[in-house]
Length: 150
Image (cartoon, rainbow, N blue to C red; front, side, top):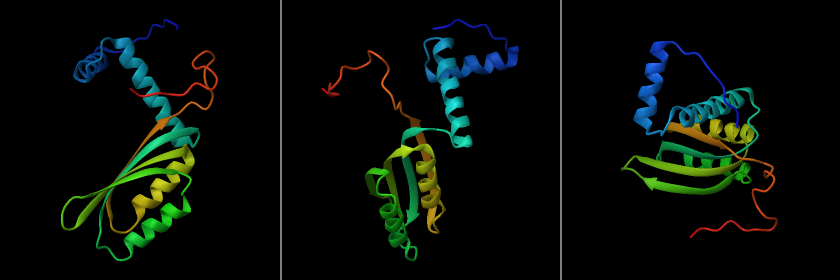
């Protein structure tokens, strides 16, 4: 780990301290590391160089919209390698929400999400991408060891 020194104007530091307190960080260093990672991820996403990721695609749609269910299914079938699982929720008489877990390259996941969100009848959509490491760090896991949950 490296120690660095940065200079921020008083107004920006006040805003940063307020954000740190509101989000419950233990110290400035933890917050700045998280904010830096988020900024780097956002920049990589914009440049199309985000590597592998897992993601959650959340969207609300009018289930009665003409042919929308068929178009959504066709999109999913065309990208079956990205979709891990989907949760379907009936919100009211007109609206459904779906939450889909996705896994793949950032570019593929973004492309798929853009097509779903752009479908006529989809009223709202948001994609949250989380980068994944493609190579294990040395010593981080034993070969052949399984990940367990209690």
